[in-house]
Image (tube, rainbow, N blue to C red; front, side, top):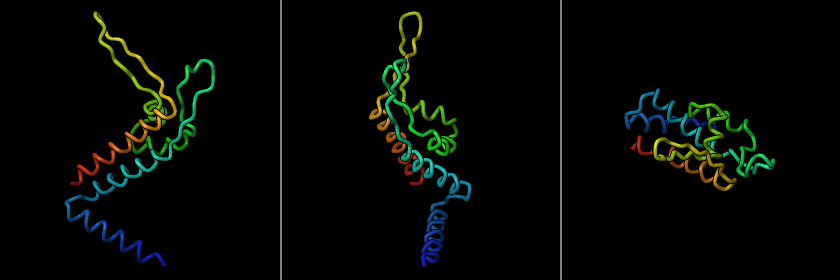
Length: 128
């Protein structure tokens, strides 16, 4: 009926995580990070259409960003901005200049995927 399989999986997984030395707090953090990666994969983008937008893209549904941003410890707006723009700092003579470049739908998706992959890789490295 599936109940035994679920209990068996959870028991086996917790036993394995205990064997590698993770304490309950670390196991909870692990689940949170993995949930963030999964939620991040649900975020989609669409092109900006207004004349003032200067191309670029935006998150299609900000409600999908909220759980992900919570796991990453930032606001949904900051997460959306991180995925749809790139900030460049240029040292120019006497001072520094900062530019924000808007990303296309495809570039935003690549950015989202890169964040998910890097986060997952860091979790893997931490466990191993």
